[in-house]
Amino acid sequence: MPMPRWWGHINKRVFNPRAIASGRWPVLTHVGRASGRTFHTPLDAHPVDGGYVFVLVYGSGSDWVRNVLASGSARLRVDGKEVALATPRLVGEDEAFQALPDEVKRPPKLMRITEFLRMDLVAG
Image (cartoon, rainbow, N blue to C red; front, side, top):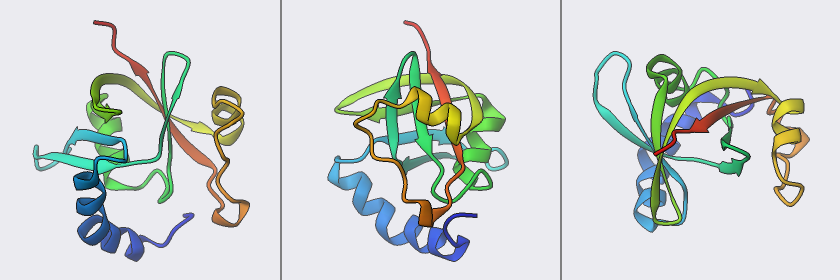
């Protein structure tokens, strides 16, 4: 796992609410797979042809990733607009880097991020 899980718990409770309130980060709205509650998670999301690629800073075991994979859909608020996303799938760094525009900075090798989540835009 790239980042320690304990840091993710701190991030979720302390920094995420501030990031959401600032409006500067893309925010993914997803439903809890067990609770059915709606969650809002600020993320590193990048537009690609036909959808978005998300950098999995805490790996594919993160609650939000598991929620999205279980439900098969989510909504993303980015640049003041909300888009519907579907067909979530884990992809490796080769596929992610091939889809990402060249100007998008790659995660530092030190972080050992090898998994990404790709989702497609829902037409309509």
